[in-house]
Length: 314
View 1 (cartoon, rainbow, N blue to C red):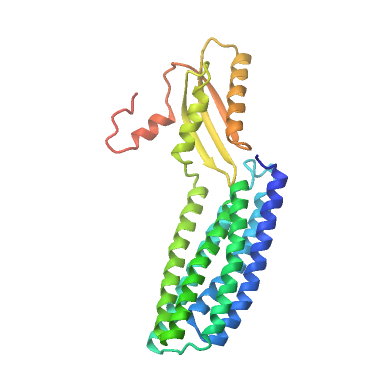
View 2: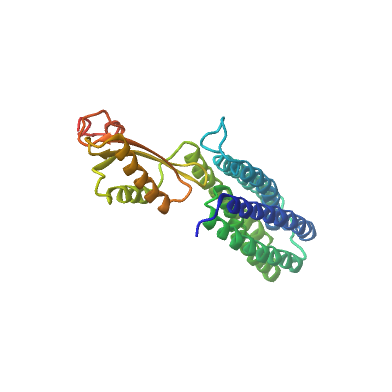
């Protein structure tokens, strides 16, 4: 069952508060662990948690802004504030990865012994369990609200699960075999993973900000819903985009040219209601066209930009 806008706002707000609270708690815990053990891997995880504090705070602000209704200056709403949040988060994740790599190079040149590994293991186990609990809640919120900001924040903590687990294994190896260099090697692996996830977050955020089309599956489903109506002779110039948790559809609906304006309007409302059943809260703009007319269409222009296109004049 779909949530109301108010229920969605409350759920996203709860998720962001939980994220900030966990980030602060884990940062303090890992700071103690890093100082007590001298582990670069634990330090890298602590830096990531510090970045998460800022990132989660940005998410909180973005969710608050994106939840505001449309106004005279933002008639499409404020949903893309979440994409801006995700872009900022990607920059901080990348910065964390670069910092850890730099410190790792220094430690290869001047090795540092890792001590009190038992304490470090305990710290990372607590972090692992807390992070997994938060991710489970964030995934639930994302499924119910389609929030890109919450999804981006969850991506950070998903990385944390992998890194926390790898750091636990690393500390066990150091404790048993005394290989301090293995700690530095793990830190490099963690930082590489951070950089990769930063790239994915940035790519998705830029796609939303530049109005990238929705998945082909959604576009095909829109066409199926429209064309299942007997009065619909066709659909063209379909444009879709994500406004930040809400979809927007624009297309031309081809109808019998002899219909009255009133009847064409009734048919269009029927199509819109069918689409809203499949995609609640979507913003839909439909332009009625007489079926069979010859006109300059966006579909043709797009095909003309494709290399070796031969159907530009169709």
